[in-house]
Image (cartoon, rainbow, N blue to C red; front, side, top):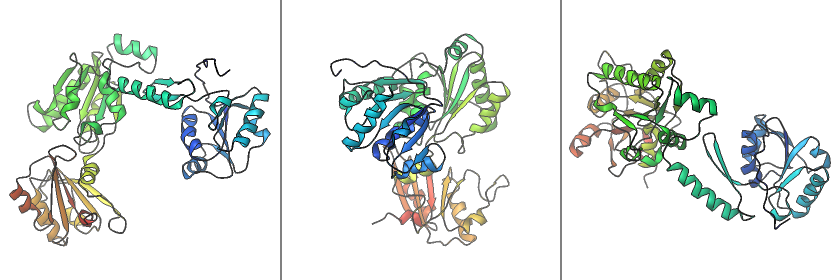
Length: 412
């Protein structure tokens, strides 16, 4: 048996019983994939890791807090033995073999009747690699395949043959609102990057990492949204029109936005415009600069015994402007962290307003310019001095302002 190649097979486990014996690290790694496949998981183990206990508490699997009993195999289609006790593992696999149930063994692959492959997933595509019994070889090949798929050009397979045909031949395409992250091109999500490689049209903001655009296929239509004329409202109308028109022409359109589409990114307006036109939309969250940029600059937005809350506001409208929707007087009374986006131009007025409503002038403040990029600059000051310090340092947008004791929380 050891000299024979295994027969590869995709198991459809939805609603079918899978027995997992063991509640340690191996089971913690294997159970999520079984749950994702829709398996009816019975887990037998005297103890569980916290992650597995969370699955049990949420009702995603059934846990029997004891050692294995032969009756646990009743109704099982597959057994995963995830214990390092070879005697106990052998007893489980022997009982499974008697009942003609395939059994995966973490302790001894040679004694198992089934192997778990090294897997990489790209949307609906799953690639499973068997390394001839050598898991390190399988993972090395899997990683190489993952790299090739991530760097590929041209659309991936869609969720079904019918959807693929619809997208290619009918007048109805689709739109994806993708968050590109705060600036570092490697901070885009895996799903966002996959959709970007599928795109036929990309509508990009000025804050999108340029290297992501450099990797687009030559035939992709790139629309620079930052160069669309008129004022902000007219520009947004034009962006909405482009998204809808290209999708109705059968194109796969990605609206690529800095940070997260729904954090001051007007993603909701674009979704509504597409919905009104009957265009299907996928929303892919992005790493928001409100949290990520302070983090890479050494400023956690929360910290134990320092801040139990953080508030994110837009500072693009001056505090005394009739159009402002922010209650700065309420924010001045909060003890947590205040993160201000797009607030550099109005920083002096914002600081003065917070101080006027009771925020202590000595409250630590930080400003991070172009966070997560090679051009990142960080300035630390106090609420009373931060505006003058920014002007003296000639900091420019995009920049994040953080106000609160967390600014000094990690200062040694």
